[in-house]
Figure 1 (spheres, helix red, strand yellow):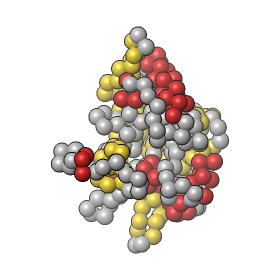
Figure 2 (cartoon, helix red, strand yellow):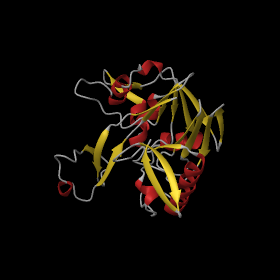
Figure 3 (cartoon, helix red, strand yellow):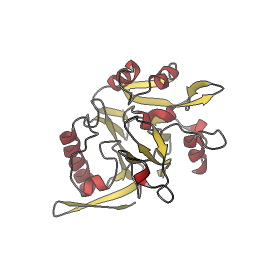
Length: 255
């Protein structure tokens, strides 16, 4: 199994929920008042049988009008057309924008041949378009692609499990992938960055902040005890890490 972080850079987000590129080397945070600063890292996993994308980023393009996600997959040595599985933790815009790409003024699926795995009620929430965290047009453009709607927790296929977590948003899910002698955990926004393991806190951007905090503790403990590699979608420093635990304190290092 090979694992790749497909970093899409850093962004500031204010009350308008627009994602503005932010370069920590040249931009001043004081020029972005009342903003949250986030980092976006979709992931790619190559197994003997599948090429898997875990969450799809913002759907932004580079200067050549190429989807950043597609280009990052090519930079990793693969063809976007060969992606077979797209595993979605949830459908907030910063995780689902790359599900589609604009071609000739129309949104089309980014991975038309792939199986997409989404919690059914999360899909229904996104398609309802009642929250600005979801972009309804993305899901409308996905009509006709291969979507596997799952409910609750279960096994997608041997070695790949999904688990309804529901801390960050009601129908959030996490994934456990145990294949080819490796154990990989993808927590989406339930475990978005290493720092959230190291310092315990309740985040305002989680629907149920206390539950999300408790889930992070559970996931970190399991990762440390069983040797899981963790994928941190919003990591600032390193996005792929291993977890250890000593005297109730976590330590996370690049894996």
